[in-house]
Length: 575
View 1: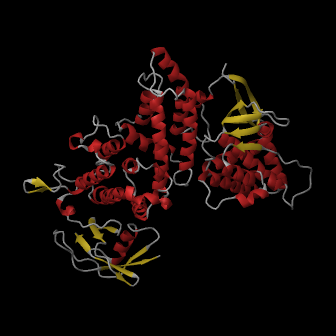
View 2 (view 1 turned 90 degrees about the horizontal axis):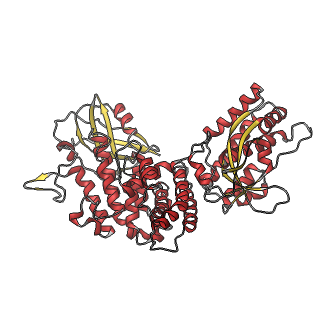
View 3 (view 1 turned 30 degrees about the horizontal axis):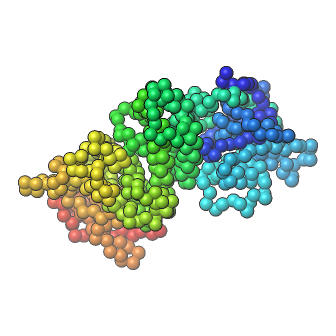
């Protein structure tokens, strides 16, 4: 029997009737304004309609064998986001009811008990922002995780909504409706039931389970299935210490680390599926299929019907995935990266990564494979990561020249770059497209340098006499002849303008400072442009915090020859 009980409960009875324990391997609090607004609107509509009940979802609990003289202790297996949000909303309404200017009618503030296991930060933010425990104020960090920031945002959002109510009496009405008329279907899991199987069918309205969450529970399910399958087949493992139980603990620790990494920045806190896909492209190799990620992870690889899958395979995969999450975090939140990497990564983020994230992720992992301590202190391992700088320069070049300037299709080169990511990530001679050149056996620096040259050749390789400019790659680059003469200095800037349907492009390779002004020589021009038109167009091509203004003579009408016109544009930038 899967569940020892299943019943429809009042929200108030649920929230105040248990001591909830939230495991550290669950993702942190992730609700944003859209989910908070939906919950508030549900409450507002229920109050207005005077409906007797409002069904608001499913919660999955598991009883814990802990002695408690006050409240039964339960593990909140599924429903954390909704339960914490409802508690925060109830506390905000109670705060409004108890405001100094409100009437002194008898009122008992609802009390909640939640323990975030091994997560002191979330515990502190919950106690302070949801439970109004001011003694926690000194422990609030200045640089908190995005999950903690979400808790703060939820409290502030609901407090603002509560303040917008007419008076304390209306706030009391809203609170009573929330606690007495909202209903949840509460499932109490049987002790022998593997609750992780339920994640593949449970679905919340608030925030759908991500593929990363589904994958975790599939892997935990397999820790029970694979050992019995191996025993029936008479397979003797090379790592007898790796039991199903040990692997399950490894999965829990890995997902705790993954959620910590993704939660370091608001930029990456909702990157579950984007990160998982980028890693899968590098780890498994991309297949052109609309449902490829589901197929390769859940239907082909990590499934009980895959007879070649072993506990060792799962263990190796999750180790790699956890390390990849750290580099994913560093790629998007660059403050711990060496300066050169910060500059390049921020510039690439500004112009758009296109499809290069799997390749960059694989490059960082290959560069530091022999120095795992670089995960925590990348800045201290600048020498190991130096080859990646050259690759970053060529990626930036590729995005601007091939995908932005040349007018070619936005997906041009994606499959080739994904193959390179796979070759960097898992250098297997059997699947490497350049095995005849020794690519799989190359040291990390040499392999990444090879990839850099490949990206460069994809841009500009050309026949010179009887050979190629880079003879390792016998193909013509993607940039047509006029464009191939465009000079480029990574990071110094680019200007794009379209006037009358003609393309004007500029390079900062000859930039020199003139006080607050910069002089930029145009490399080629196929039309006339006015100062105001160029100003509008150039402003969209430079960092958003700069205001660009053309103050000099617009470029003259030139021939089709790709050469500098010799007349400078004066671009004034003001921070």
